[in-house]
Image 1 (cartoon, rainbow, N blue to C red):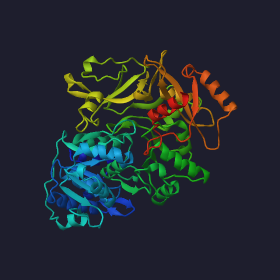
Image 2: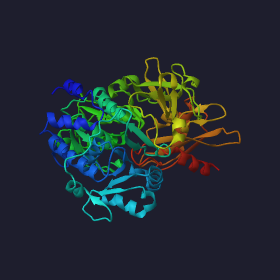
Image 3: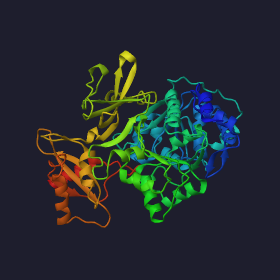
Image 4: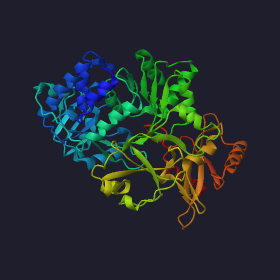
Length: 549
């Protein structure tokens, strides 16, 4: 079946579990999963039908909020497709956010069903008060837990009968919680239509054919790969803590199975390139690579690019849990726009909006915007707040009206909702979006407003600098901040007079940074556990303020 035929057949799908059914009919003996175990599309569809019946007979019905704490693998994909098929609402939380944050999220969630590995059930047993709403409990292990069924129990009560949920585009299909790396974790509502549109746009935008062998490093994109008719290799890594990955194992996955496509955060690409280039390893089977989750720097693209074929392409889309993808650009396009010397001085180019998504730049404000009619749209090349809309943009958060007010702008005339990304940027004369950093991280001084990405780019040019962070500390009662740059040096280097002189020369060489009066050094920046790249600048600002005082 050609890709266009697959698209035509899938055009009427709303419940995305039907993609699996179509693929099982067309490619029954093709592996849906290649590693760590081989499962054909026929076998996966049979498992989903059996689990759908077992889940339904256990009391999980349409709309049942079902917390799923299961790592990527056969059980995970079977469970998610089964829950979607019967119209239940799988809820996925990133355990990397930490125990306290998870408990806070679960207190608000009030899950009605809970499916997890045995270790996850320890959380439930230790915190019974936040799980008192749960009426169906299932473990993936064989360990007996009081009042908890096992997956084998599901198969025992499966009779092949269940109500297949046809789904409406506006139905709540799933809830994905943000990692909490840029603010309190929020439950992002994914509608059935939103999921379907994401599957279709990722297929079209990135040129995904049904013949791909996909390296899965992120569970949601692994779900998409199965919907695309790919064969998936589950990477040998802890997807909760990808910064801990062993690059040798992931490279072996790619080489052993001839993976043709992969997703990897910039940190993942850096680790693979650092390991592979030292050993002259080539990953010539890869044809398309997608990197997102944090700013992707040109050096990362160039390093990883030396390991892949000249015909392969690296995409660096921009987006968030609430809206993915928003824009897209390839490494080859990016290298033609900027050079290593001035990289990020004008922000990071993240490409043009993925049609039919739209992006606009509006005047910066920390206040809610109750109506699109009141919004001031900024002209070309003026920095402001990034807002987006499109068929794969989440309409709202779960039980969080404050977040909705802060992040959503209704356009009543067209019955549309614009989402505020919480990021700053500009749109150039060619319609390309440039990212300047988080809105909450801008530093408002007496003289001007400073943005993280271009200011940090000035210091990141120094060969001994691993990364830098612009932070603002309180300077007086006016509310203005004093700009401070914090430097993390590469391993083996220490601050000295020569280095300070060179950094001060860099600072004074740019109008962007000449207002910075303090340069501090700190090892091991506080960063998010998932991408190891999003700097917790609030923590750094607190640290810097104590040091300067």
